[in-house]
Length: 103
Image (cartoon, rainbow, N blue to C red; front, side, top):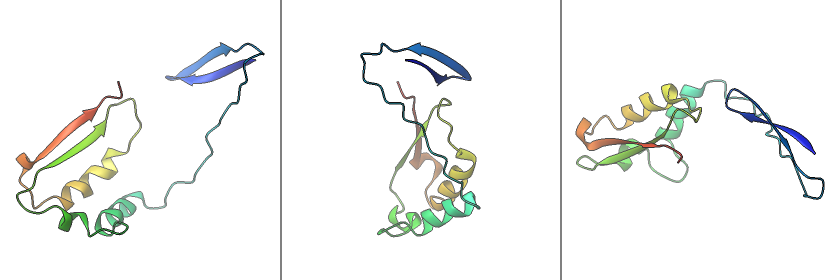
């Protein structure tokens, strides 16, 4: 079986012997939310079965925020401003960012 895989910005061809059981799993398209920023704000203000983030993290506590490296497409421009706003009662030195490099 000859297949092509997405690799970086291009494609990578691979030949798999016929005796190897192979199943190609394709992602399914999921339509995006109409207002992504509002959805993030709502999730932080009204999480499932928890109080709002702004109430869950108390003054004096420290927070670690883990973010992916550039190889993972993540809309931080939509996620971080409301997240930091919800944590606005903490001093900056109580918030630490860690890069999860995926290696």
